[in-house]
Length: 175
Image 1 (cartoon, rainbow, N blue to C red):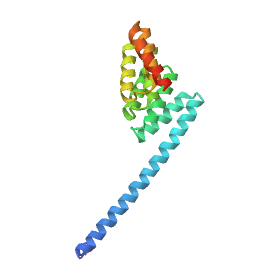
Image 2 (tube, helix red, strand yellow):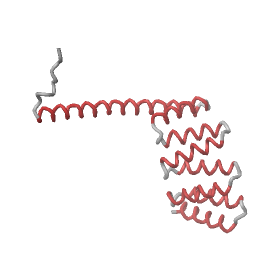
Image 3 (cartoon, rainbow, N blue to C red):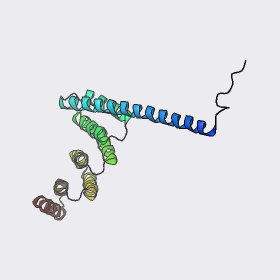
Image 4 (cartoon, rainbow, N blue to C red):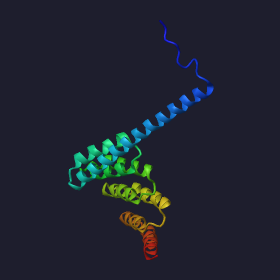
């Protein structure tokens, strides 16, 4: 025997009520998933930071990669992943992680500074200059960015540019 269709005898207002009830239940379920994801991410960020502090770089990398599986837009996870990769001497992957951190949070000076410092270490001065110049575009009043730009110009023998960058850094520092 066929079961009667339960929705066949619903009035339009009953159907609206069922539809809104379903939407509410879906919204609550999404909220639970979001809370679980947030808690998972927070736990792994904390574990990664502790591992980084303890100089357990492979463990830190694993924790930050877990964070990124849940949230690809975590500037903090990308930045700390870059630190861990840098400490292991994996400079190319550190560069990649810093670039992703900057893409997520363009006004975060530390990511720009670390990216440019890694380029400097690799003697890729033109790329370091580009990073500092882009960072200054986003954070124009950050004295350290101007000072570090001056240092790279000094390495390249560009005295006039170095002096100008140092003067800007000094002016900003004195404000």
